[in-house]
Length: 160
Image 1 (cartoon, rainbow, N blue to C red):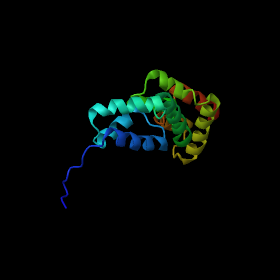
Image 2 (image 1 turned 90 degrees about the vertical axis):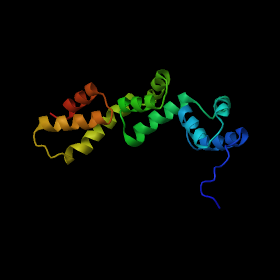
Image 3 (image 1 turned 60 degrees about the horizontal axis):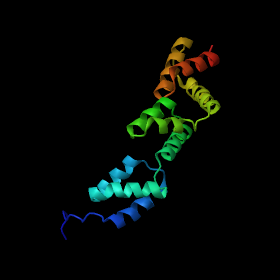
Image 4 (image 1 turned 45 degrees about the horizontal axis):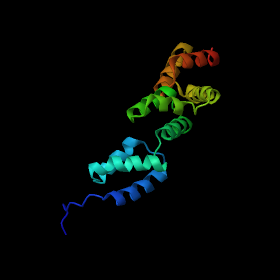
C-alpha cells in the first residue's frame, strides 16, 4: 500500500453532509468553515456554494458565532472586551457583529469579574508597596483585555 497516495477531493454532497455535522458540534464562523473545506480538498467552486447553503439552512451565523464566542471567552477564560474584540477581528468578524457579541456581557458581571480577578491575584503578588501591587494588578487585567480606565477605577476603589 502506498503512503503518498493522494485521496480524491470530497464531492459537493459529501462535503455538505460532513460540514453540517461539524457545524452542529459548536458555533463556527465563515473562515473556519472555509479552511476546513480546503483541508478536506473540496473543489474551490463548491466552497462558496456550501457556505451559502449553510447560511440559508441556519448552520452558519456570524452574529450567533460572535455572541457565543464573546460570552464563552468571558465566562470561561475571564477575558476582557478588548481581547475578545481583537480575537473576533482576527477571525474576520464584522464590527457590527462584534458589538452584538459584546452585548452578551452584562456590565455588572463584567465589573464583578474584575473584582474577583483582583481578589484572586492580589495575595499571590510579592510586591509590598500598594503602588507596585496596583501596577502589577493593572498590567495583569489589561493583558486579559480589560479597559485601562475601568481597571484603574476598580483598583482605586478596592485597594487603598
